[in-house]
Length: 366
Image 1 (cartoon, rainbow, N blue to C red):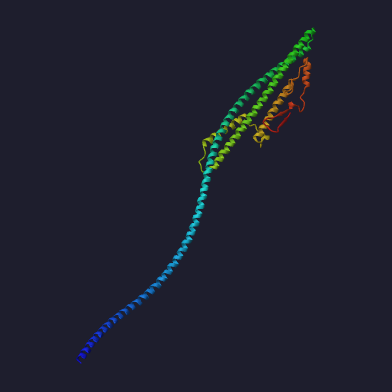
Image 2: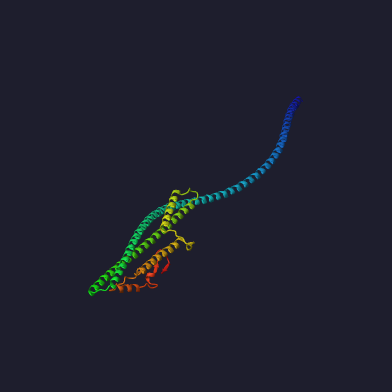
């Protein structure tokens, strides 16, 4: 029984130990449960906070996403605008490069044209100087020929007066009776020979005068052509300088000294031309061009010279200064005089037509 009691006591002790262990386990479990509950509550709160934070983060992310999308759209639009501006800038740059190339080419052309114009101007100035010297020489020749014409005219007048004296002497000799027929025939032959010689001398002098008049007229014509050529060259130089001034509007005035010299040279040529042809204006010359006035003056001067020659020839009983050949003198002076008076210039023959070589289409008929 004791053993049973001891056994039961030991069993009781074991059970009590088990109970204590179980209580300890229970207490530890309760503590763990409370800890777990606390942890669960904290986890639930954290989860709620996390859910709230996640919602807020989602909202912020959506907002950021929308803002980023808007920013991306704006950036894309700005990029497209920048690309368009870049393309337009590239096109403008290419256009500017082409314009610069064209401007450089035009500047090179302008430089070449300026060099050519300067060379042409120098050549024209040399031509003007040559024409000026030629004009001076032609004027000198004209003055010399005028002096020769005056000299030959004085000789012709002397020969005409001598011829008139010889004719008067011949008439007086013819009127006086002669006893000796041989002496009379000899005197007649001598007088006839002298008359023929004087007629030939007069005819040769008239031919020389006509040749000198033709030479003077050709010299005047050449001088007039040279003056017109000089004026044309000066006008061309003035137009070239004006064109260069208009082509370079921003450049300073191109060589005023050269323009001044050109103006002075033109003034000198105008002065020379005015000294060559005196400005005798009449009522009929008003409104006419200088070339027409020159034509009229040359024609009138030639007409006056021919009329004066005709009047002088008819006054002295000599043939006119036409371009007809010199007639052969007859044997007797009386027949020669009658033949001279019978040879009147006919209308529309060669001696009554004057041609002006410096004019075009002008015909003067005496």
